[in-house]
Every structure is written in structure tokens, then in C-alpha cells.
Amino acid sequence: MGKEGFVADPATMEMRKRAKELGIRTVWHRYKENHARSKDAPFQATCTTCQQGPCVDVRRTGVCGMSRDVIIAKNLVSETTIGAAAHVGHARRVTAIMKGVGEGSIKGYSVKDTERLNEVYDGLGLDGAKSDNEKLVEIAETIQDDISKLNGAPKMLQFRSLEERKKLWEEKGILIDGGCTEIMEAMNRIAMGMDHDMENLLLGACRLGLVDAYCGMHPATLIQDILLGVPAITKVKTNITVLNADRINIVLHGHKPFLSDAVITAVEEYNSDPKNEPKINLVGMCCTGMEVLMRKGINFAGDILQQELVIATGAVELAVVEIQCTQPAIVDAAAHFHTKIVTTDPMAKMEGTTYIEFMPERAEEIGRQLVKMAVENRANRDQSKVYIPDYEPSEMLAGFSTRQLVACLDKAKPGDPLGALVDNIKNGNIRGVAAVIGCVTPRDDYGYRTVTLIKELIKNDVLVLLTGCVATIASYWDLLKPDPTYPGVGRNLAAVMNAIAKANGVEAVPPCIFMGACVDNSRLEEVLNATASYLGVRIDQLPVAGSAPEYIAEKAVPIGFWTVALGVFTHIGDQPNVAASERAVKWLTEDVEKIFGGKFYVEADPYKSAEKIIEVIEEKRRALGI
Ligand code: BF8
Image (cartoon, rainbow, N blue to C red):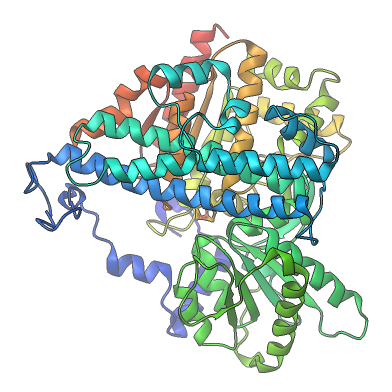
């Protein structure tokens, strides 16, 4: 029992206890040891830029005279740059794969969705290719140009954002050049003696939001859709308890689901041979886990906070990681068992692990090599150390790409799928739409903020779309399980969901809609743009909100600046490290709304956050006259 009667996921709690008994320090232990956040948070105004400093706990100015407000804005730009660089790095890697596939040097992947290929090819304004492979190359070269060019807005931005936004961004001076140029200039502006204007710095952070979206998330999603398939509805099981004590367990961890695709193929090959016993149980973790659950129906074992706990079961033969959100603590957890961890990206190595570089040209061979490694390691398992909590995994109905969502709505209102959504928003059955996205935090009871917030929203007839770790945690509380009684869902929203389910010939749809991993926030823009265009209004007029109740990663910061620049009211559960500057807080939570129509709202309490989100949605409804 935790906050206000909240009961955290029992499988996770039991594994935390088990880890403690084994002497494995988990993220929750380390959080208590290291957390330095205080109410007045003076440490938040610390500048480490030059050797006159570090200027710690700056009350007025640093040694150079830089104000506390500017130091804080500069630090926020730095964090935002790192986040944007992570997503651009992801896009760069998958773009290189796409180019190799088109040119024929990479044989293990091919076009899985021609419709998506053509949509992207045409959308980027390309023309004249004679084959799908030529299209792959041209798209890849266009995205590479978007990422690397010195001048001119990325073609992806031109393709994926609404005219009204582009015009506004240009007017306000945040229309971006190439992704790498922007990242370089962001580092340049925070160098000693450069930008000392708080507002200019924060507008710079908004630019990085656009970099993240149009040189990172959008290209990553689109390329993955083209080469690995557009997600369609699928049912999976989730939580640590999807591990199988009788099988060989392999965990796929990271964000870039190309290596995992090769491992999946190798596992299918291994499992299909009747001579091979025991069979392999393949499970996913973090965003790669979400990618493979959506596209391949692979069960999901854990979010960012559960990664050590999954290893602490002692049942994992091999964890394969590629990029992002891997906590180095898994090495310590694995050292208690036979578990092998393999890192695969030259920019994401980890001491104490085996490094096998993922070369997409050799994907098939590397997939088999990893499977062989896991199979051989099974003999080293000490079965007496295996401990998997005895709870049923949760059920998740997933795979709601925008296309799948539209297909479901089309059954409800043939020929006018968006009408099926918009009619219900207009008549008030759906009060509005909230996208709840991002990470989970060790700051309070596991899942408390996310689960409580979502429950409050759906109870009040707000349709909730989910991406990222919050989504998988929601599944542990059955918020992604179709149940025809729609427990906890507002009466009107439940009636809409029931009608959509019936139109699609299924018993029920889940209380919330899971739209994918963090890069798939790009899918949320597809929904926003389509709805705004259908209604003939701006995004900032729509009764919608975004929320990252438990964000922790740097990647979440540019995503937040992007949603604000799109015009979305954006809730975050924790103050970024800006509390020591009243001016910065005011700009982010008030002034920026006058520029873009969106702003940040900071609140840790999920009840208060839900109340505020609903209030904003109701205000927007009133302004629209609905
Ligand atoms: O990109 S939600 S903890 S896993 S950052 Fe990481 Fe946050 Fe999870 Fe994926 Ni997203």
C-alpha cells in the first residue's frame, strides 16, 4: 500500500525485495542515496562552462557576471541538445540502413510496406524513381541531407507539419536548418561568452524541439514503418512475469529495432527445429520492446525501472542492448548470475559486457550468433537461483499506428473516419484527447503518478493516447486490456469505445490507446494535424493536452519543447532544473503561450494535474463553441 491507497505492481515489488535479499542495488536504492533535489534547489543554478568556475549555487551572478536566469536557461539548452542529439542519432543510424537496403549492400531487410514508402516518397516531394529500391535511396539521401545540411528547413518538417505552424515558426525565428547544424549552433550558443539572453536561449530550446521531431522522431518512425512494417493490432503479454523459467530467455533492449528483427528471425528458426530443446522465450524491454511488441507481437518484460529486476530473476541467458536508456547497473545485477549482456553500438558500449558490433550487412549472421550465445549460456544457469514472481502477466491490445486507428474509426463511420472521432468530441461524448507519454520515475510509488493520472482522465471521458514507458506501466494496471465492461471509463467515453469495438467486430477496445515507442510521438502529430485540418482550426485551439508525468530522460525535454511549439498544453510531473529562476519558470509556463499557443505546466500530484488538464480541455471546448 502506498500513496493515498495506491498499490504498486506486486510483481515489481516482489522482485525489488528479492533483489535486496541478493544484495543487488536497484534504481530505487540509488535514488535514495543520490537524490539531491531540495525545495529551493540552489544547486540548479550551477555553471560548469569555464575554468573561472565552477560557479556553484549561484545566487546573483557567476564569476563572469552571467545571471542566474541565464545560467539556468543555458543548462536547459544543454539538456535539450543532448535529448535532440539522441533522437537524431537514432534517425541517422536507421537512415544508413535504409540507404544500404536500397543500394543492395544490406540484404537482411526489404520494403515491408509499399503504401508507407510511397506516402513518404511523395510527401518529401521526390519524383522519378523507377523502383522501390531507388525510392529507398532517395528518401535516405533526403533525410541525410535534412540531418546534415547547413542551411534550409528539413524536407521532413515541410512534409509533416501544418502550413500554419511552419509560418508561425518562421515568423518567430525558430524555423530550423539541418539537424547537425542546429545541434552545433546550440552548443555554440551556450559556449562561454555567447548567448546571454534568457528568452533567446529558451527559444533556442524550442528550435531543438523541432530538430528532435523532424530530424529524429519522424524519420525514425517512417523508416521503421517502411522496412519493418506499419504496426497493426496485436495482443501481447506484459511485465516481468513473461519470463519463462523453463525456457532460454533473451531480452531485447534499446530503441532501434533492426538488430532485434534479426534476433527474432534467428529465434524463430531455432524454435522451429523440433530437436532444439528447451525453446527460446524472446522478450522486449524499453522502447525496442515496444517496437517489437507492436510489429511482431513479442511479449514485453520491463520498462526502464524494471531492467535490473528482470535480470535479477536469474532466468535471463542473454540481454542484447543497442542504444539509449540502458542503465549501467544491469552489469552489476548480471554479475550475480550467468546472464550475459551484449552491447552492439560503438557509441553505447558498457564496461563489463561483451561487445558485438551490429553491422546491418551481417544482421542475419549476428542474429544467429546471439541466439547461439544464449543457447550455450543456458548450461551455466543455476536453476536454484531462478525466481520469477508468481503473477499472471498483464494483457495488452497494441498496434494502434495512426493507420490502424483510422481503419478502426472508418468501420464506425465508413468513408469519414475522422468524423467518427470529431463528432464524438463535438457532442461531448469525448471531452478531449490527452497524450500521456514518456518515462517512469523512481521518485514515488512505482507507477503512482501515471496510473492515477490516466484513471482520472478516462473517468472524465478524456480519450488517452499513450507512448513510451508510461504505456507499458499502464498495461500492468489493465489500462490496455480490452474489457467490455470498461471499468473506470466514463460512461460516455465507454459508449463510444463500445460502438467502435462493435463496428470492428470485437468485444471491446482497451480503455487507452497505445501508439508506440517514444519516437512514435510522431504518430501523435499525425493525429493532431489530421484533427485540426478536419475541423479547420489551429492545433492550439483543439481540446487536447500532452503529459509526461514521470519524465526522466533528456530526450523528453526537446519533445516537450516541440509539443509546446506545436501549440499543445504540456504537463510535466517534475520541474526541470529551472526552479531557481523565477523568470525562466514564468517564460516556460506563461509567456511562451503567447508565442506558440502551448506552454508547460508543472505538477507532481496526479489528481491536480488531471483536474488542470480537464480544465484546459473544457476552456478550449468553450472557445470553439462546443
Ligand atoms: O525513449 S520512455 S525511459 S525507454 S526515454 Fe527511455 Fe523514457 Fe522509457 Fe524509450 Ni522514452
